[in-house]
Image (cartoon, rainbow, N blue to C red):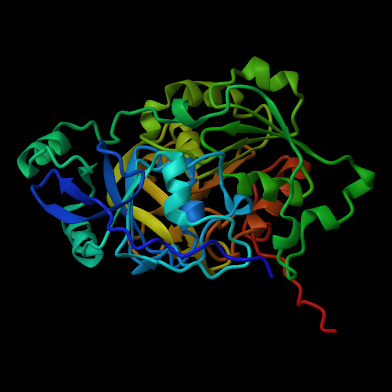
Length: 413
């Protein structure tokens, strides 16, 4: 077994403060990048019990200071295989207890040391339950995370109030790839044994593997791995690739990824999608769900405190089955406006009844608000990638039967 990184040293960590726009100030200790600095972001919480490395590298968290509700973080370290992008994306990180011990043979580094190399500041030893309760009651709050002892609490609260927040900001431009990329990595050892993938099924009439162009609005790597695992050849293009650039690749289908910020501010992608609907089948996830809705003529709105975690119940309205899903979004699609635009709901959040998925009955378009690639999170919804493959072959959006998960029992030995 490989040696785990050495436990944390006993040198005292410098003080850090998290100040919110409502006047609250939480005092703790800094980790990661502990140089004197102040970073701003919208403060949110994630309820996942594990998967902090995937959370930290998810581009959808750009511009946000993320608090984990799980009381101990860092106990299994970090490793390069579990990254969801090429770097840490969060503005800051908040935990109750930072583990001094790393117990994982896959770990190559301690969390705090890796965050230091990424230039991300964390704060530990604050009451994350009190912080989460405040965010649940007040809603999403702008905040600043500070390790500079020269600043007063009053100055930090003023900086939090003056920070831009997420509304009206196109953060996708900051996280999208700028060049075309051919993607071939699949799920490898993490492929669920019980999943019947479209990749394992013979294509009707010996058809070629479908070619998917993925618009990178901040795409998690596990989404791209799932597309490959579902039997697709994948080309990744920048978020603002015009219809002509997409058409050059002669795709069988178009995928619109997750990403950060306000969907209404990502006007280049919305405008391009309006022109591309009807040209090829289109599937969207998370921000992609919102952008496709806007392109059809629907409206989006900001949620009070968002959905972030690996335990969100969603009902498939066609099968009436409930999936436990991974989610990370602070905006949602207005269902009435989507209905007026011709969209048909397919999935519903059972916590707050918000829209979690839709299809278009007359166009080969469907999307979900949650994350079927589930990294971190459960695997209940990975069937949606196979539904996309079927849509590319049939030319129609998936119905209830198409979106019924096709599973088999693992063979016993």
